[in-house]
Amino acid sequence: MSYAEHFELDREPFSNAPDARFYFNSEQHGQALIRLMYAVDSNKGMAVLVGGVGTGKTTLARRMLDNLPEESYESSLLVMVHSGITPEWILTRIAMQLGVDSPASDRLALLKQLYERLLEIEESGRKAVVLIDEAQMLQTRELMEEFRGLLNLEIPGKKLLNMVFFGLPEVEDCLALDEPLAQRVAVKYHLKSFTVDATESYIKHRLKVGGARRMLFTPEAIPSIHRYAGGVARLINTVCDNCLFESYLRKLPEVDSGIVHSVAGDLGLLNQPLAGASRPEKHGELDEIENMLDQLEQKI
Image (cartoon, rainbow, N blue to C red; front, side):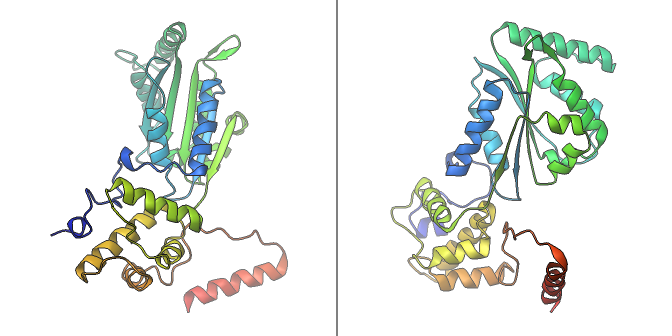
């Protein structure tokens, strides 16, 4: 018997594997999607979504792709898997994703092919959109210059290509490599960690999609999960998944705060800084001393 059977679930509700069924439309995710859709609907050219590890950037990117109907958009999602990507690879991949047949090996010839394809998309009454996930991997000035060049593919009064970057906060450093590109970002939104209330709503949503007939976490367990996971969705999934498994092993009907504390210890979260937590900006000599004390406490 698995814990899903023990708790009468249809499926495990806290897997970190991508699954559109579990998409949680939190207030901030909804606001982010509205802004990003506005950017492409209005042909703004460049939009950026910034978020920490595990805050749901990839999930949101896939959700946005699903919300771009084929009759209105020619769209694609590219995931940057390493930092060794070249401008030539990016240009060729974007051209292929947008429907360029047999991309030329010569850069100028390829740009001509892409421009002609973008004109075809425009004449069909659709918009061309490229979503770039893990955009913090784009760590060279040459790449940023390539993207700026792509934004220059336009006709009078209208851009032919819209791009949306999804990335960790380091994506800001990437954009700073090419100031003219950074200045062309028309829409930017920052995802933050969940509050305690949002964490509770998130857990209930995942349980419902998983087929739960009742709440499987006690009221006292929720703040503990939020504290140890730092409000980060991916860590919430990991903690909750392990808590349900631990409760199943102990033949308990629900997860209480004691189980959460035990699981957090097993996962090494008891003495870790809150995941996703941000601290106020510090200034002055006193703040430098406070920083030094913080570092000493971490070493003890």
